[in-house]
Length: 37
Image (tube, rainbow, N blue to C red; front, side, top):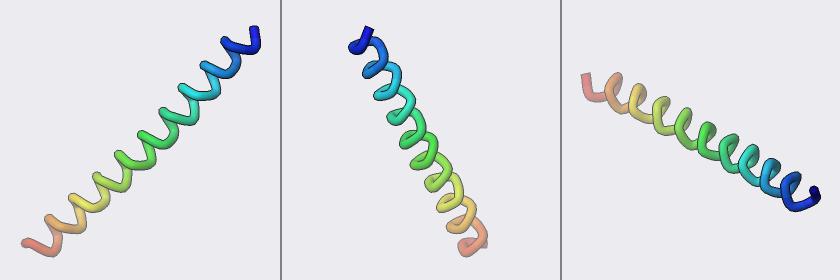
């Protein structure tokens, strides 16, 4: 039971971090495109 809980927490945190990196990448792309144009 504890192992399942740890796996769920790991996936949740991993997904949260990936989402944060993705949003940062999208914002960086928008910033670069604005500066380029």
